[in-house]
Image (cartoon, rainbow, N blue to C red):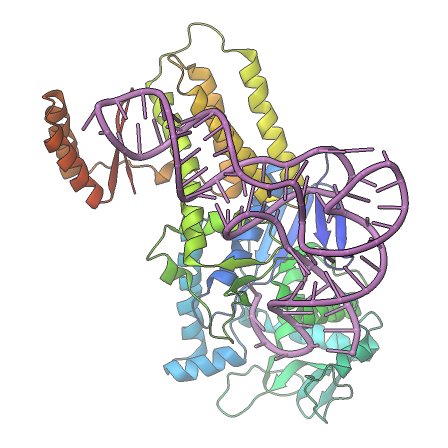
Length: 468
RNA sequence: GGCGACAUAGCCAAGUGGUAAGGCAGAGGACUGCAAAUCCUUUAUUCCCCGGUUCAAAUCCGGGUGUCGCCUCCA
C-alpha cells in the first residue's frame, strides 16, 4: 500500500514518491510571532503534526522544518504599540507558541529557523535573481519581476492577467508589473534594518521561506505545507523565487488544510473574529481541541462553536475511558492460563489495517477515528466477559497506543496518578457507608466528589475514579 | 470579472459507480442499592433541486439554487 495525498498544484490525489526513497522533507510555514495564535492556526499545526507523525509511522525518515517570521510590518507595528523591541516581541511570542503547541500535543519541528537569522542567505538569493534578470532595484527597494517567471500563477491556477484584473491589486507606479512583489524593503526611519548591496533594509515576506526551506531540506522539498490563504500570493511567490533561482521544482507536493470558520466565516486576525487556544483551554482540555480538529478531513472547512467542542469532548471521553480501563485491567489481570482465541487477535489486526488504509488515503483522520470507535465498542463488549485474557487486553491496548501515538492521544501521562489525599479518604468513607447500606451517606459523598470534578464508577474490579 | 471549495439524519461527519461508516444528542431495554461507565435495540427507502448516462449514481455528465473562500496582510 502506498500513501496518496492531495496536491494543490495538480488538484488531485497523487502517490507519495519522495525525492530520495524513504526520506521526506517537509516545510510548513510557521507563525508570525506578533501575538498568541488562534485556533485556526492551531488547526494547521495539529494537522501537519499528525501528517508528520503518520509518515514517520509508515517508515519514512521525516525532517520537519517550521519557521518563525520574526520581522515584518506586523512585528514592527506591534512592537511599537507595546513599546518593546522587535526581538523582545519575537522572544515573547515564540515562547508562547511553544507553550500553546505543547499543550496541544504538537511536537517541536526538527528545525525552527528564524527569518532574522538568515538575512545573508536571503541577500544572496536576491542577488542571484538580479543576475538572472528576474529582479530589479528601485531606489533601495528590490522587486521580483513576475513576468520573468513563465509559470507564475501555476500553483494558484490563475493566469497572470486574471490576477491583475482582480480589482484589489495594489497599484504602485514604481513597479514594472502590478504583481511584482518586494524581495527587499528599504529601511524607513526607526525600523530595524540590515546591510545589503542595495542599502539598509529588511527582507520581504516571501523570500525568507524560499531560503530557509531549501537551506535545510535541499532545492526540491518533498512536501510544502501551510494554510489555505497562503496559496496566493505567499506560496506562489516562494515558488517563483526558488524555481527562478535554481531552475528546479521547488516542491513535489503542496498541502493546504481547510479553514476553521466561526459562524460560517473564516476565523482570522484581520477580521477580529478569532479565539486563542489559551482562551479555549480555560474551558476544555487542549486534547479536546485536537480531537475536534481531527474529527473532520483536514482539507474540509470546519466550523467552530462551543457546542461542537462539547460534542468532541464527549466522543474523546469515550475513547479515553476504554484506554483507561485497558490500562487498569492490564495491571490487575493474572497471566493467561491458555493462549487467547486466534480470532480476536486477527480481528485486532483488522482494525489496525483499516486504520492504516484510512490514513494512507490522504490522511483521512475522520475515517481512521471511526475505525477506532468501532474497536472501542468491541473492546468494551469484550471487557464485560467474566475472565478477559490478559494478552488480549495488552494487545488491544497496544493498538490503541499505536494509533494514539499517531493522532496524539492516549498518553499514559494523562491518567490520574496522584490521588488527592482528601479524595482518597472520601472514597474510603463512601465504601464504608455502602457496606453498611447507608445509601444516603454514600450518595452524598459521591455528589460531593462530583462537585469537585471527580466521577466515581463502581465496577466489578473495584472503584474507579476519573476527572470530569 | 477570474479561480476554487462545500451542500449526507436533530447536530458533527466518512463514503467518488454496486445499493448510506462512525461520533454527539434523544428514546427503549440490560447491568447497578441508585448512579456512572458499558452493552443491545432504535433514529436518512435516501444523500440541496431538475434533467441525463448506466443493469446500477450520494457518487459520473449538464443545468440550477444556496453557503463560503482566494484574487490585499492573514493559517
